[in-house]
Image (cartoon, rainbow, N blue to C red):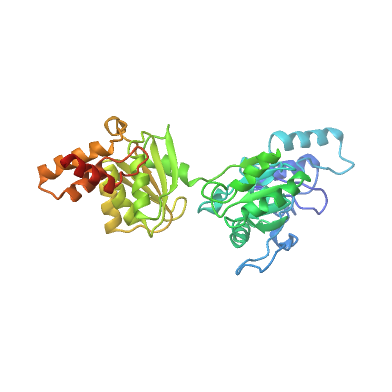
Length: 404
């Protein structure tokens, strides 16, 4: 909805409701025959161009943007010869009734403070550009320096938001953030605003940003956040699993042995567990999850969150594992696993090498197995508290000692 504007003489008046516009004009005593509808902002055709400042090569498809025009004041200036009572009446109506601003336009006129001499971590959309906050837009326009994980993606986001990035843009990624932290903080110490953004989501959460935060704390410089989209919280909320207590474990390890160790250490975790995983390793990770946590524990696989093809698969680990095998998911994924039951959560006591040797001998005799195979089975079923496994050679030597 647009605001009504009535101006004297040949100037335009605008409204989505012609009757309210004519009433307002009548209060001013101006003719209403020539009153074209126009936006409270400068029309797009007349809006001045603002060429975006680029550093380096302009990304392909990056079009120039337009600087948003400032909306006019609510208060109306009537002709000089209009009686004072009409002036008061018109301004009162502007503030309280017919010309009050539509709440839907609040985000366009919202005043956002940009802190000076501060590091600001700002969350960026994780898939839907419409999730960008008013604070992010203001910071992109007004920060002195923007430290971006990937400058090309930053410019692409700015293009989609029709935002002019006003400050200097620098690359700040995993390979250089430690070396750049102090240089960026020197600008903060001089009263400038340094905005830190990642490709998607909140910086420092599996993204660059931690180095500059730590150095800022050490140097006594202020750090704040402009919160926003979070894949972890979105997945938790959509999983249907308990959210009062949870732990976030990031990406599962790439190597099978390291992944199994990490999962064994979490087998007794009572809290809901959140992982990130990629489409290239999801099948292997699901097989390992079923082996360690068992087939019946509840979980959710959330993919392409906030995007057009968002999908949430809920069920037991076995059901999700079969689903992944039959219909491999694509895109970015978040795995949410239910916490352990009371029986599963009982802390397993780490067995000594001698105790493992005794169990292996009993297991081999009961199942007619070779002692080496029995040792492997027993060790796998009795991991240490940190998820590691006992040394097979030590257990084998203990078996030989017991036989003697």
